[in-house]
Length: 123
Image: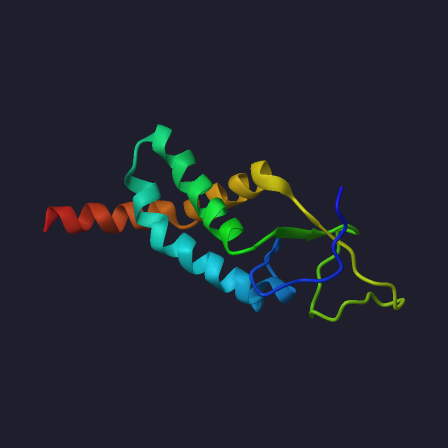
């Protein structure tokens, strides 16, 4: 398993707070997820996985890695060291978990989105 101590701009940091909110790769990822939410909400079940996989593939194509801290903690900054001054070590979660996380992100806010789409169609 490759250990990573250097994060690049296209990397996606797994997590809901801290550095994950500011990381350029996360911002690009969230934008792509947002642009695909309607498609995901309205496509057939057997097509949903393809949407998630294509987003992961697009991020990988530009050198993005889906990273989590090996120690399981949340980073509040991109400083490469923990409290004890040791380098923070990251690992890529792999495509399977990246696709699962992407599907989860695509589902966020879905009931509200489907309701809005239904209202549009009745107009």
